[in-house]
Image (tube, rainbow, N blue to C red; front, side, top):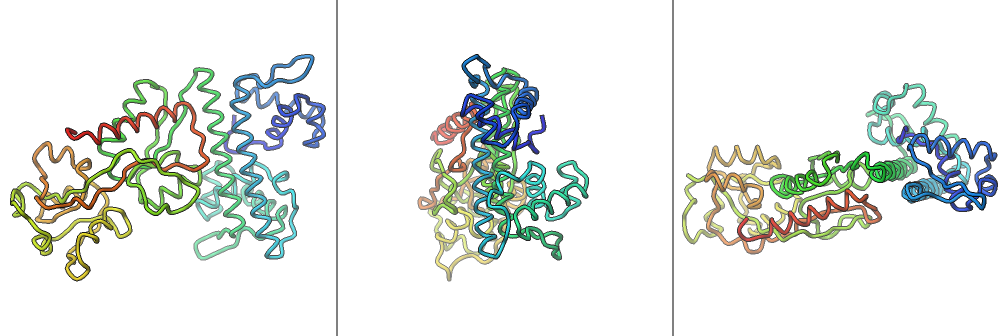
Length: 407
């Protein structure tokens, strides 16, 4: 079944039959003939390899796997309706003359084209990414413009620029596609033929202990699960989370919350330490104070990150070290620290193996004010599958282990 370009008329027909328990009554709601609705439901059932309805003389009753899928279909259609309504609202402010019932008219291909263009800003790359010809993608994009009555795509120096309305449509389309994928995963889990897929966005701290521990625990109970791990800067990972490309984001939590459509759940409190190579002049010294640290080079994450904020808070502006190398890769940080007299402010969890092997040691200086919460960030309205809920439990267990004093 093609999950990335669904037939939304078929999905609406499924929803209305479930709501009315009747093909005849659903026909009037979705403006499709009864044979067309029957055929639509049959195609969905073939694609999912399940029976969506228990057909009785008194009506059409949704089956157990059908109920799982129906919940995701309703959420997906709600995203499409919200996105279309907000886009039309913007368009009307700017003089647009599109159809008011845009959500009832858009097709899966049009929405998939818009989502792909939002990622690539290029017709050729977008077409290649979703596996259709460039003329087909171009036609789908222009058809959506015609239906909406708005200019959604404009040529720019970089390629194609999406209007604010187009970005809203793309955002909600991607969330709708993510819901339908979740629905397919839940049906597959119900059939016992798969354990679903989890996409995890991870920041540096989680990669050394928490994430490997949780993944191994999940694989022990769900060997068929497909896990994708994405590394990157927080802003990029947050964008992926909010747009449905990432399910769970793991790392240092933000205060204040950057946007209101996400929630954060703390796993444990992490205390930062100043680390150096074992032969560093400060290694093993007692009673080190901040002024002893100023003349050494530092390796730190970029400005705006929680660790960098703690570093800046440790020093007065006039006394802050000025020999700073910005790096977020643990491999690069490790190489710079082991090959020089540089210092770094880092979590003990990130250099756990280096400490155990004696390659890196903490500097004996007070860092008691550097505690920060480590946890997971989720979309506020995200509904995890059973496997994803299990993975969240495994992450919480890993967090408790990480918080143990004898780690």
